[in-house]
Length: 159
Length: 219
Image (tube, rainbow over all chains, first blue to last red; front, top):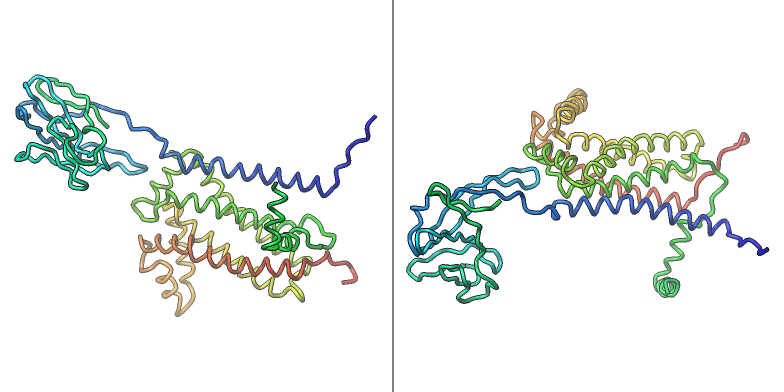
């Protein structure tokens, strides 16, 4: 028979203290991490169809600005925010709807009719009327919303 | 590897000397009542950790305080736990500091040469009560509002200076946004800084002088 390995009192206390301390540390640490990152992990809120307005307002071949109010819940606050959407049609039957958020760093682009382009004031990003990048730093075209037409009303899917 | 690094660091900063002074210091044969101070310290650390976490979401204004607390409790992962630990920890603090004080009284541990440790302990007791009083208002619900109405009114009862005390505590005639903001500021800045200063003196003295033994019949 092998002799039992002796654990000194001091070593036992050391291990016991460290393990209990570690458990308590985890008991604080894990909930703390979940608590801190919780709202950041929450995905986009449910998407719904938002009515922009009558299709007759969209001029042929010119991006037309629609402003709609949407309710947004952030934390414990429900805010009414204004959503700006550019709608474009070439034939009066099929429509595209573009976000006015620049794909570079999130500033708001504006349609300048005289130059037939979208311009972003922050870093000189330029987009054509379809939202494709013409020049400047934006890495991709303007984001598009899913669109549908119901009873001559233009709707987009957003949240 | 770890041992090597520990030695490397010890050679430069002598951390082992500090470690030994704190954790390997000689103590007389004592009983479990002598752990009440450490228990208080543990809960104080809990209050600090959970309190800091709560400030990440809590907003001390009348139009957001209640809603942000509800958000913490019902919407955030483990928010109920963090708030619960802070809430129940607050009660535990008061119970533990009182028990700790009673132990010191009954064992005569406040006597020479530990008077200054006792004085700082009395200040710490007041700080803990201050934490409890200011923290109670922060959820801004009915209980908080009326408890602070009553509490500040009680503070305003002394003759002559009473009215001034009441107005200073409330930041005006009535309980308002000003009251909530200054209670919050006191709770998260004034009192924690005071606590850290006085507590470090308290702990330094406990370690420097050493703790008292259980008194015998002859003492």
